[in-house]
Image (cartoon, rainbow, N blue to C red; front, side, top):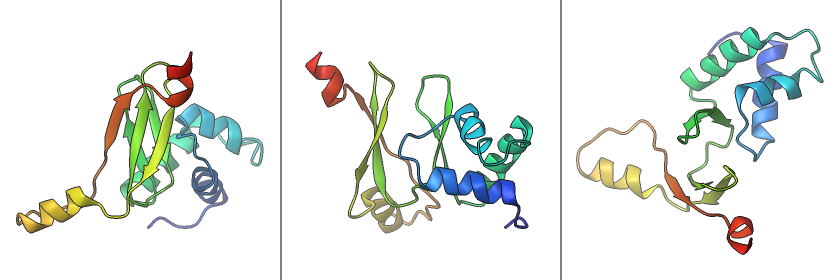
Length: 124
C-alpha cells in the first residue's frame, strides 16, 4: 500500500460513498471541491494505485469511459444501454469465485456485468 496522502484518502472516500460509478473526470471535479489544488494527473495516478492495491474496482462497460467503484462487496453491475447508468445488484455469494476455486483455479477477483434496459428507461 502506498503512503497516506490527503488526496488519495479524499478520492477513496468519495468512491466509497458514491453509487454512481463515476469516471475519472467526475472524481476529479468532486474531489476538487474539497482539495481545490488537486490536479487531474494526481487523480489518475491515485485511481491507478488504488486499483492496483485492490482498494477500488475499475469498470469498463463498453461505453468508452473508464468508471470506478469503491464497493468491494460481491455484486453484479447492471448496465443500461439507453441511459448508460450502472446499478448494483448485491450477491450473497460470489458463485463465479466458488466455481473457479472448485475447479482448481486460484481466482483473484471477479466482475459481473448484465447489459439491458433499466426500469426507468423501459417505462419511457
